Amino acid sequence: RRFLRHGIIRLQESGGRMMLNVIEDVRNEFKVKLTDKFEEEVISFLNSSGGNIYIGVNDKGDIIGINGNIDLLQRTIKDRLKDNIMPSTLGLYDVVVMEENNKKYIKVIIAKGNDDPYYIKGMGLTPDSCFIRVGSSIQSMPYDMINNRVNKDNVETYLNEFGKYGCNGNFNYDKLGVDAKKLYDMMLDIKNK
Image 1 (cartoon, helix red, strand yellow):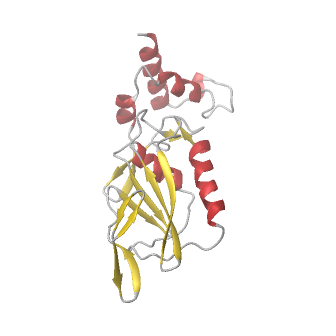
Image 2 (image 1 turned 30 degrees about the vertical axis):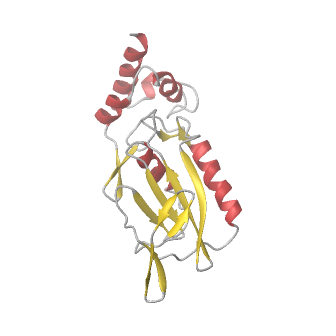
Image 3 (image 1 turned 135 degrees about the vertical axis):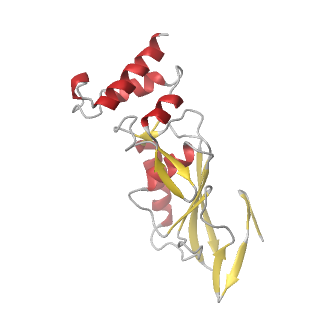
């Protein structure tokens, strides 16, 4: 066992390789490197029960390590979470550098968000932008699930995003799709209650 400031990580040796003694599941995701889908993974944890993303670990749980500037990678992760996800994720994650057998990897610890649904900034509340965790994978949230999670406390944030979504920065209700119009109308109803 290794005792760390973020809990106990159990490692096991298998054929000379160090492996995490956890599996990919509803609370854990392994990534060899930072990918374009990183924000979607984080959103799925924020909208579910929270979880961990290990970067520098393959799908079998083998610690392969990270090549390159680890400090730059940490800043990139922080900036992507801060800049690309709405509502704000500040205070809902931590980025921790771990090391085993001279191999560094990153553990991104994500709490369950309080202001869900979380979504990709600039895309609005759509199934293409809102995700949940199902087993060891992410799933797009259907419109009815998104509708059920919007409340009076966070509706203003979502309404502001509609002005950017699909309208080149100028809000035009007629350019919204049928489902987006229903969602927009529902949010206005919530706001005006």
